[in-house]
Length: 377
Image 1: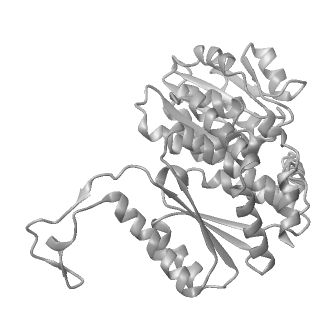
Image 2 (image 1 turned 30 degrees about the vertical axis):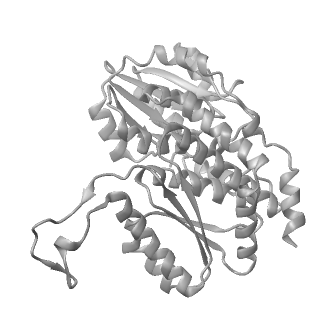
Image 3 (image 1 turned 90 degrees about the horizontal axis):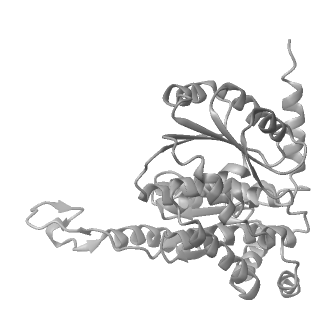
């Protein structure tokens, strides 16, 4: 039953996000007018922000910062007030991102940063954000009209702030494109999508994404958006429960191992560095009946993998379904590959469920209602 469906995936059209290639040289030129700022304030919502949020939370941890980054993906007055207190117009550059140029919350926040140097990232045409940029003499950077926000990890909305962060964006994009080729030419991603599709048809409608890495867990919002907005239509799709391990073992593993049995698990593991060595020489204390001086030496990597294997062993005892993805490291290329792989996974999941991958009709309806509620009372 599943084989014909998987064969359809193998012969499916290459999606538009995988065909698009950004002009990286032009993005470096755009960054030249921004990189002198001490503070970068990025205003955006949803898919236009989630990939860079992941990059900032992963690769951004390892780089010496010559500037501070502040993300505004809300209209929460306390958060915005805090950012404005720390970022004055004399040492701050604002980047406002909206593919359509008509995202009201982006425009509302931008109105609070009058007098700040500003660059907008938006598609060509007559969107409101582009009109504001023209009338105020702000910098304008284009994003493709045909690539929707959650699949924009290879466009300016992600790459421009990543350049300012100091990321090797060419290596990141190389990993992204490698994932696209892998998804088409190799069967692993297709088989994984097919396996979870079949498991869902057996009642496992929740996918627990257990990410044993601080770096890769920074992309949990992106993966959640990819899966929820791409699959969940016409009462089809699944619920993604994304969490960071081993911290999730102090809360969500209780749900997975002892709650309703409507769940399947996908682990994300990292080979990575061994890290420092744990040992307890000369400590004459026991831990649960074992002398601590006999525990070790072993690496932090082994400690992390042992935590994951504990959960995997418990799932095996329950005969609960699980699979794993092991990333080589947390380099720019591997991070790019992870983003591209998750984009393609969501795309294949949508094709299997016979839903349109690139719209989000319920989201648009909610936006219409929200705009109507802004009328003056």
